[in-house]
Each structure stands twice: as C-alpha cells, then as structure tokens.
Image (cartoon, rainbow, N blue to C red; front, side, top):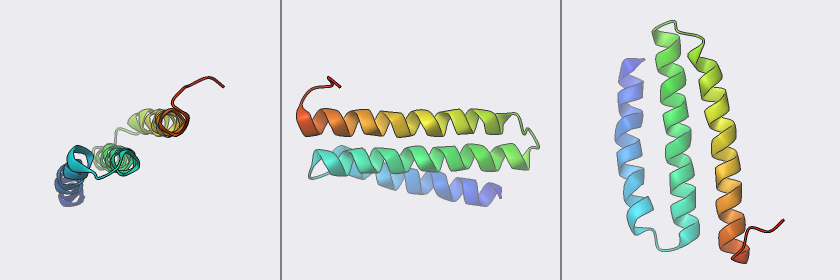
Length: 84
C-alpha cells in the first residue's frame, strides 16, 4: 500500500508538468484537479494503512473543497467574473 502511495507521488510530479506548461488554462485546471484527487487518494491510503480512520473525514472535506475550487476556477475563466 505504501508503494502505491509512492507511485501516486511520482504521478503527481509528472502531472505537475502539465500544470506548468499546459497549452490552455482548462488543461492546467484539469491537471491541478487530478493532482488534488491523487493527493486525496494518498491521504486515504495512508490513513487506512496506519489505521488512523479519523483522517478519512479530513479527506472527505478536502475532496469537497477541491470540487468547489475547480467549479470556481472554471466559472471565473469561462466568464471572467465570479458574480452569481
């Protein structure tokens, strides 16, 4: 399980390249979201491995905030404003 978490760290580093040099803003947002999902998965795997199950609640809150963050960024870059 730790090996899988280390693999996710490597994949996150590779995906970070897309955040830096993505051809469009949408590609950069999608790559940042993918990194956030991989971080959430790493946190969940480590919480289960170390039997620290309270940390899974933190992972759920992080995932909800990540979803809201992506929605705000996509709305901002689509319209150029954040007025609802």
